[in-house]
Amino acid sequence: MRPLPETNPEWLAEIAAAYQDARETLPFVDLVDVAPSEEVLFHLAPHIAIKFRGLRRSRAKAAVDAALTSYVATQDRFPQLFENPHISFAFCYLASHFGLGLVTEQDVDEVMTFVECNTAKLSKGINRLLMSSPSSKRLSV
Image 1 (cartoon, rainbow, N blue to C red):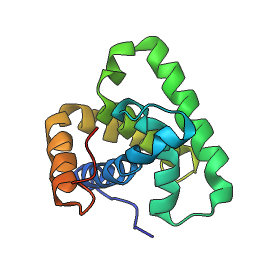
Image 2 (spheres, helix red, strand yellow):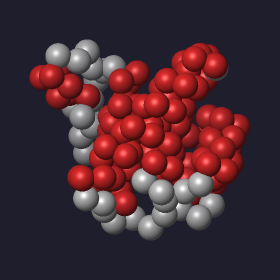
Image 3 (tube, rainbow, N blue to C red):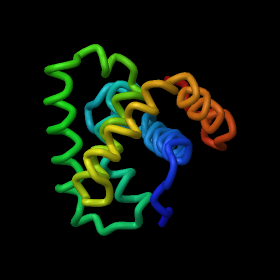
């Protein structure tokens, strides 16, 4: 179980780690008839949030509902926001924490603003983790 990040940079680092964790599943998604693509990783954000917080799987419904309903509602209003799979994942990861009652809506807004302003840092963090991962050599999507 990881402690809840307390600062925006800590959230950015955790989101990068969560994204890397989700990305490691890409070689296996075709087993469930999903094309391996980073664009689908946002679906895994609630499950990674539960994993990182050390919560019971029974909490998945609340996390998934919060993430996906927020995603759909936001995509309708700001479709360009989710053109970057890192931002899509970050949004759903944070919305999951909101659905689990771990953060407030204001926390999500504040962290997402930070993430959007630091997209390049998020991407660098993700790439750095991917290159240091022992499974990175298997990941060629």
